[in-house]
Image: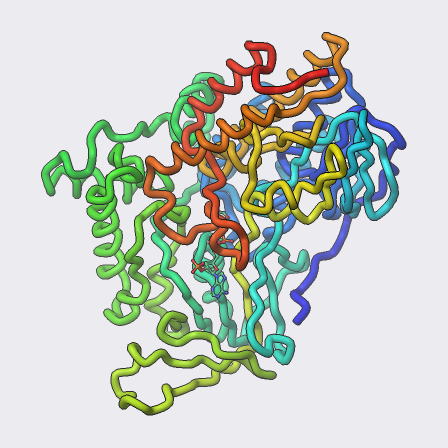
Amino acid sequence: MPLGGVRNNGRMVAAPERVDVAIVGAGFAGMYMLHRARSAGFSAHVFERGGGVGGTWYWNRYPGARCDVPSLEYSYQFSEELQQEWEWSEKYATQPEILRYAEHVADRFDLRRSISFDTTVQTLDWQGEAWRVTTTRGTTVAQYVVLATGCLSAANVPRFTDDHLYEGKTYHTGNWPHEGVDFSKKRVAVIGTGSSGIQSIPVIAERAEHLTVLQRTPAYSVPARNQKLSPEYIESVKANYGEFRRKNSLTRAALGGDTPTGPHGACEVSDAERRDALEARWQKGGLLFLGAFNDALTNPASNQLIADFVREKIRTTVRDPETARRLSPDSVIGCKRLCVDTDYYETFNRPKVSLIDLREQPIERFTKQGIVFGRTRSSSASTAIGDEPARTEIEFDAIVFATGFDAMTGAINKIEIRGRDRRALAETWVDGPVNYLGLSVHGFPNLFMVTGPGSPSVLTNMIVSIQHHVEWITDCLARLRDSGLTTIEADVEAQREWVEHVNSVAGMTLYTSCSSWYLGANVYGKPRVFMPLPGFPAYAQRCAEVARDNYKGFITR
Ligand code: NA7
């Protein structure tokens, strides 16, 4: 069952034989790493699997794809000229607009001449003093390697019984055809109701003859309230962009500095006050809904009250009570990433949209024309004990897999990485990713990760975290050069303490209470370890202290 592919449109740049810094990936992390390394006087080269820049925004071209962080925040802040000249058109930018921005950055900073597109890094071998980087096109020796591989770039495509028999079209949201897909007059199924499903479902429903949503776990979603940005608002931010950025970076998620987290816990206020606070955030829209109260992700009772509010919104939006029931999550709100939507729940009021709850009607197998659904006994009141539960086959012209990613470690683990003593990273991470500061792994000298596991990454505005890492790494490389040193590696004890620290911070929250991709629980066989570290400001402070303290916790030579 090959999933619809993408068209490559990159041009070929030959990689040098030797380079100071090899960078894997030309998304926002890789592009800035290239620019920063060059500016610091290092030679640098990027290897990119795709045919163009943009990373996530190069691949995720599904209908309705947009960022869930406001565009005036989801952008680089390293260049005042860049942030002044670029004009975002909407509160939440669409994928095409973000991709145009990435392309603008690539041109503006003359990045393309050092990027090999359509080039996959296959192996990284530590040679004692440098890395040998083997790609689908050749070999480069690099003193340092930076993995800018992205947190959500390895698609998770679940397998189903007989899925090879299906003769209709299949797509994964994270690998969408460049030419787009016309769903008019088509009977379409979407599997998955995370952010990608929730963004694409209302848009696919516009065109499709019929849309069937296959939901395994209902998600919590809040309205985006997307809108065109007014020139006055843009002007007001740009007039003091530095201060706007500074306030954002002081929040836990490095976003939304103009809407601080409420000062109370949800249980500390009256019912009316709680409702008003939640309603105000619901009307404002977006991820900051969860910041109405300061204990949403630490106090189960508060979390329950906030979740009740959203469930009530679902009940009052979705006209069919049975559909509303199926769409209502019963888990901790915010445990899986909150979704941000435009007309998601409203879409289920359309006669041409239906919902199948896979917990009641599991996918049994694929056929030539569609999918056979079983029926669990508990969901079938009419099934007498001893009877076989009923089966239904539904035919689809196209099936969309909105089934997410092998997050945070997936893209790294696709590369065969061998460090000191030829030890494989996959072996070191067999029980889950270990590292120091989310930046460096013991046994793998001169290898850095941008927004890797063990750093705040996906719990923050990614671009803020990316900039922070890139700048920290470049400063580190410059310090090594200035001190006449050539290698750096995480100390094993510092790494052990860091892993413990990340676990203990995560353990103080409700994040570990559900089967999320933060935990690796969405990928069969992946070790369950909570990967990102909650809290950007404390993390950034710690990184600064380590650097000031002569890279404490690292071994340099
Ligand atoms: P997500 O958030 O991982 O969502 C994937 C969805 O696919 C989710 O509803 C899953 O259900 C569902 N899924 C995954 N595997 C299966 C199988 N085997 N059967 C049925 N359903 C399945 O990925 P997205 O692409 O939506 O979003 C990723 C991030 O991008 C998002 O968090 C934002 O940060 C941007 P489950 O919940 O696992 O039961």
